Each structure stands twice: as C-alpha cells, then as structure tokens.
Length: 92
Image 1 (cartoon, rainbow, N blue to C red):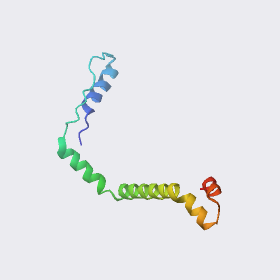
Image 2: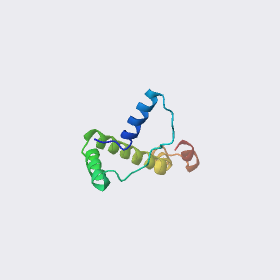
Image 3: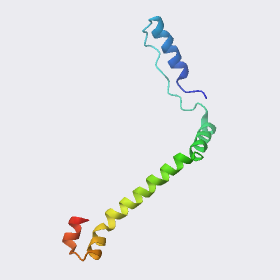
Image 4: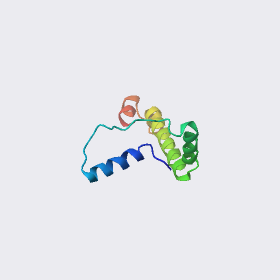
C-alpha cells in the first residue's frame, strides 16, 4: 500500500539525519492518487469489516434512542406517572 506522503516523509527523515534543514519543499496535496478505484476499494474494505459496521450501527441505534427520548420523553412521563405537563417537562 502506497501512502500519499510516503516519499515526502522518507526524504525529510533522511534530510534531518544529514542535518539539512531546507524547508523549500512542501508536500503537495494530491488526492487523485489512486483515483476513484482506490476510493471504492477502501470503502469496500471498510464496509466488509464487521467490527466497524457493528460499531456504526450501535452509534445509529444510540442516536435514535436519544432523539426519541428527547422528543417524546416529557409526554411519556406525563402519561406514565400522571404528571402535569409542567412537571413532566422538568423531569423529561
């Protein structure tokens, strides 16, 4: 696997070992390395990783539960514990 900046950092490490501190060469951001085929390959690798998929699904489920509690929590407390709407808002 070839990294985008691998050649740049290899060059910098040899320069720092020699003692040359010339900072004229800055890394060029070239996001086209590998192109769309590389992007597709990496996305496939991510989405076929079972641990990653289940962590993402757990995060989505957690967000759904939290948003449901925020939206309907006061009404739930009002109905379940027979509270007034004012006190249900304070608890929910």
